[in-house]
Amino acid sequence: MSISKWISDKICSYCNVDKKNYQKMKYGIDIIYINISKTAFLIILSVILGIVKETLLLLSVFTCVRFGYHSNNTIKCTVVGIIGFISSVYMAIMLNPINIIAGMVVYLICLIIFLRYAPIETMKRPIGNSRKKFFKKITVITATCLFIVAFCIGENVYRNIIIIGISLEAVMILPIMKIIIQ
Image 1 (cartoon, rainbow, N blue to C red):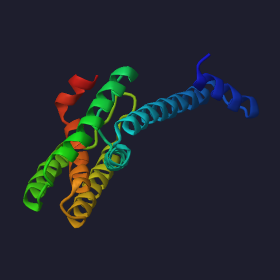
Image 2 (cartoon, rainbow, N blue to C red; image 1 turned 90 degrees about the vertical axis):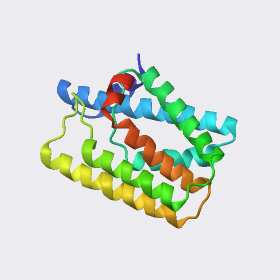
Image 3 (spheres, rainbow, N blue to C red; image 1 turned 30 degrees about the horizontal axis):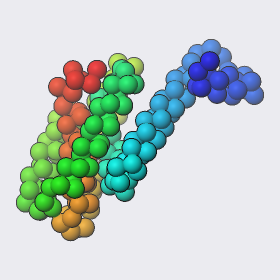
């Protein structure tokens, strides 16, 4: 028996849930379990590599702007995520601090990508037009706020991580990523 089925069954033993709502609940528990597992694996790996603070910052930035494609395969998602996060942290550490002019160029490119492609909807979770406009505004506002924070903290690894984190999410919503990830 899977963990999500066991949890769903336990919850249902305390309340009356019909089959349709049981499936929704189990799906939600599956998503939570998968995300907790992947995040724990990423954090454990970053602890081993000695980059836990940087990884947590990148994860936080990435999560703030999260509207990219989703993989249909948990293992593929985990591998792509681990490679993306770990390599992005190392890139942020190894790069010279990103100056304001380079950061502004990256910001404008990301802004164009977000305005053009965000948010991404899935077959299982379509987004209505009014919600798309709302999510697009939220994405642009959040990315702009994060870039402002990056420019205010000075030229250091944390600026690099914020800018790379937003850039990583911009890349994740490009149409080519649908082919790569799924």
